[in-house]
Length: 387
Image (cartoon, rainbow, N blue to C red):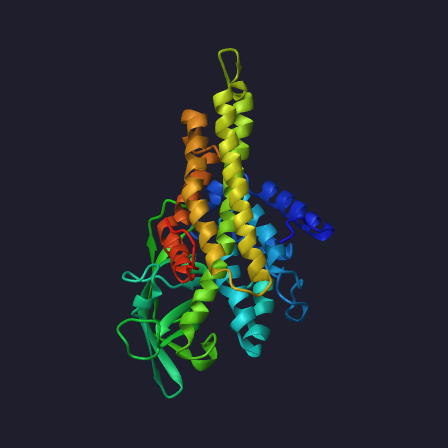
């Protein structure tokens, strides 16, 4: 892929960077985290007014008609600003799935509302016995007379208390486990039978347990075809993971920038600690990891933008960023010393959000299994050396 940005993308990136930098002060971040909803609704509306929510929505649905690559530039800047809101979840579980798999009626009804910031969407996939492997999902949607009764418990659902829709996976054909007989539903959040319980989290995002108790959904709420939800869900999670990698890269870059600024100002032995070779080498290692992760993440986004599979590329990016990103955060804290854990300093936000996203959508070991699986199907040619 060509990693050079065109003129419009350069302006988009700089505009997003300036916007998030001005709005996401440490005070604003702490206020949002301490609030009931875990984010600022007024700030979310400003994001909609900037056109970021509708960036990759076609103009016919009141969007800007941009590409997934354009959207990734904004997501990276949001990550660098340590921004916590339903922005990412609405994009990953609302905009992109509806664009690709939604009916014309769903697109006409939901996409303009999402672009204006009036609808929040979140993903409800994980269950107590099915965190990363969704083939163990036990939630059931029983059909009767053209409607379904949805029952089941979902875990680690972001921003559930304010969500207008939950994108969720449930069994529409009786089966204890497996990828067959699963269907995707867009479930209205504010209705009887939806019970929400907060979960403690190290990150600033609000995570919740959501229990569906006989919630009514119809065939119009289906995303895609009935009993064909497995493959669709995998594609949705693939895109969500790729965008999350972009967000983490923005976060890690923020940690490197904050640390670089700190070592220039922190003096020891009558000189800035950044003048010591050991410190310089540590920063160089951290910067190299961030740049490597950025290339891997944008490679995955580029393939998705071109409409081709990026399963292996996304797994590589997430595995590398989760594993090597830990070294970036450890290095940042070691170079800061005690200053790094001060709650009035931005580095603690970097660390806590990184740890939360490191586990979300599959940590390094889970992603490496995907990469290994892709390698195992490659034929070994005659004469090829295998260690």
